[in-house]
Length: 288
Image 1: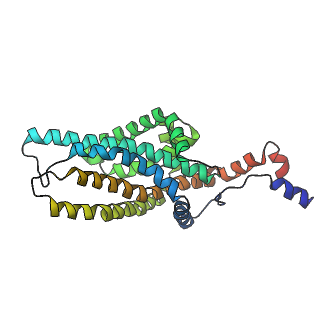
Image 2 (image 1 turned 60 degrees about the vertical axis):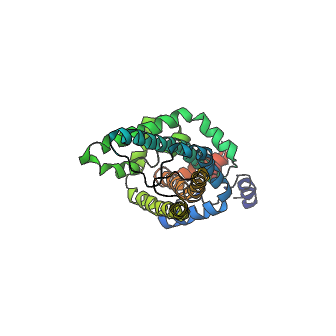
């Protein structure tokens, strides 16, 4: 075999920017997830913070007097509708942000450049399917939660469908098939997914406490019980919450996306598929 000729041929194959497109042990995967996050912090932070900053001004619509507790059903139902409506709106907008983050992580991981605009533009093309996925998961979770005996299934459902978003985006399957495929792919690795969720959520809640605690102390110091806090305090709280979430949440998106690709490598030889694509049509002859 002519080694120099083979060397010239292999040099034409585009290299992965992260250089680690291979099956990884769980510890390696977590380590690479944090390294990836550090290396691409600016992009991932920007993608995540945009929705929060857009929604921040609307936080003044749900202001309540400090220490106020609804008295009677006539006050409770409007309060609950307002709060749960706000939670659902944040969840939906945040879901699109998560999808944009997952797309950006995938592009970088596979050696392609991506910008903030490109990430959200790609998600714009999938807005209908993403809305369908969000509603499908939400309806299933609410349905199970309404049955007291099945409530323990709710955490398991998150593990079942952990890969549904990357499957929808990258394999372009319909929502129902994406959910079914995610359940099949996660079989046998749900313990790893659970540990990933647990670790990343600890980071999220720690960051949330660090950001919100000073605001709560400030509110207690300057706002009397039963009084509305100043608008600037509400806006400051919302903005800091958005910034804190944008700092803490991307590592979970990175880890889940990498775990998705790692699972495909182990189960389906996805790394070999990538190699064949980069070798081109004559790949079988080159590998022979």
